[in-house]
Length: 166
Image (cartoon, rainbow, N blue to C red; front, side, top):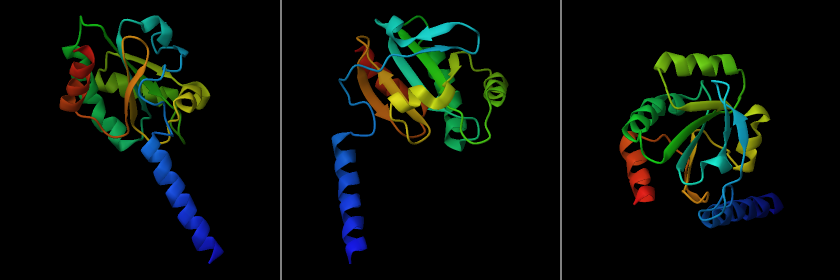
């Protein structure tokens, strides 16, 4: 009986947390800043991207929906060239996946937007990422616009970016 009561309490608490947006950065909040070395050796610092919409995609190579959505990210990245939009794919090491495998995957698909390794998953922790893929959309003022925990297609990416860019 007591175990059932605690089970119900946990379910209610989780439902409340989801309803309140707990478990991630809430829309309108400042996006946690981070600096990482990209696969090409440059430094990407989120705070230096003010004035740009930033799409942050948390992924890893052996995640099937992560793999499936990458061509859509590339398509939309190309579509938005010359506009104030930056994409960065953050490889979050999971299980047996290595940075070498992540780099091979990026090369294999010919992905040309920025990628970096989230060493020790520190950025993922700051953004409370629990599921993959997770994508954050940061507005031009550096605030969280929305979080998507799902495989995204080109139409959905374009819809969100159009909303952000007005």
